[in-house]
Length: 458
Image (cartoon, rainbow, N blue to C red):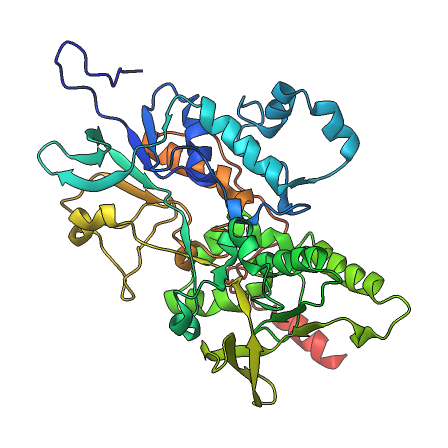
């Protein structure tokens, strides 16, 4: 591999790719690139160390994907950055074997990623990327980070997502008793004085926060409330054939649909990527059941209100918070008075400010989003010839598998193969039993005349 160090005053060789941001997806790409001798790669992150949703590493929380959905295994099972090799180095293979758990504790997955990030030589933390320019003469990206300028032929954005706060909660944006689930563990103490706590959102984060509050606030008289717009507290789709919508086959099918069909399809598939696991919902039910042994169901100060949208919020006249709600089926409106709110309202991709210098060279769609091809390359103006790739910013073009960790290694391999211009990692042609596209229409031959008469006479 060509050296990228500036020796003897010479201009260092440009990197084949630079990754901006080091979350699980770019970390997967870094792990696969580490064994690609023909591809020089560097990954930069502003944070001092790897962290993955630290506010949601609550006790007992488990991953929603099997441990095989690690950084590399579904593409390269022999890769030294696999979860099983991590267990081997941690001397935990036998305990893991006897635990008979397909889904990892969330804290262990985060520790595994930190283990890889701390050891991968192509990952550099404490290096915030402040600007990206395009040098048309050299046909290279100029990536400004921590006082240095790195040159690269390709750029991969893995800057992650940011918490979503619904517009209805804008009046309470700076209120100390309103927090997003992303900050739940770090700010859980802020809820200690509240005697009425409301969780908004029925996805996995909402379920885990509600369960954690049930466990920690049992018997202290605190009223706990769980609001969600969805008509039911429904479990995530986890049937074996249903999960085939998280395969490369489905991604290819989804990418080929018209844009308006894709935009309508994603919200309709909420049970595939925004619902809670059946196991977490069962734990909530079991906890409530045991707490009410020998007492009426309504003895506990607990409310679960599906089909309820928060339309407006504000501060109460005598302190506290007021949530104006509307019931979806009946249309009836009611007022909820509470003392604290945890918004488990999800995340969305945002465009990093470092892209501003080249924003005019990107071919945005009608809604200001990236146009992304099947190889996860963003469409750009003809004068920008370097590859610009995205990870977890293409939900609108690649579907519900975009944020799924189970497709992370496959997407990283697709990008790495595209950058290398060859199949460094051969990928399967078929990954699902399901055929998502309708069969190709065929013109059937007309039956012969004698056959028609015989059929008519019967």
